[in-house]
Length: 127
Image 1 (cartoon, rainbow, N blue to C red):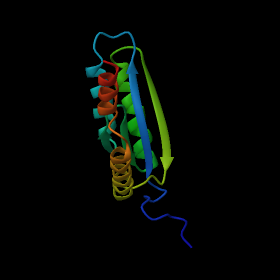
Image 2: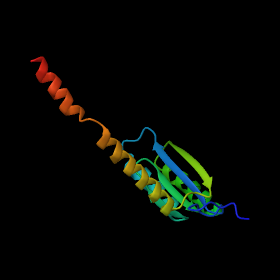
Image 3: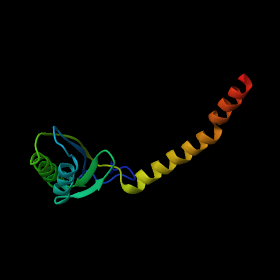
Image 4: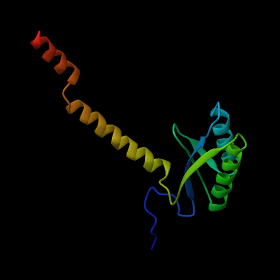
């Protein structure tokens, strides 16, 4: 009997979401990019707005994380924060969840009264 849930990657696939925070540096662009590039030499990487996701087998992910940390430190003091998980959701499941959220958000927005118009009408009534 398999414990693997539909839409999730095998538990052998380790996912790691990480963020680096260069400290006391004039520019953060170079150290952040260096950390991402170092991680990408060891496993798959997806860059996000606030963090980077990498995945692969355990050895690949930990090697990528180690190299990302070393790369950012070459520029000076830095903090690296990481969250690790085994058996992460696959792209198809994530896309499905996002589509559901988008539908709910659009439905909720349509059900909400137009606050801007109500506020304008109230303001005209006070005039």
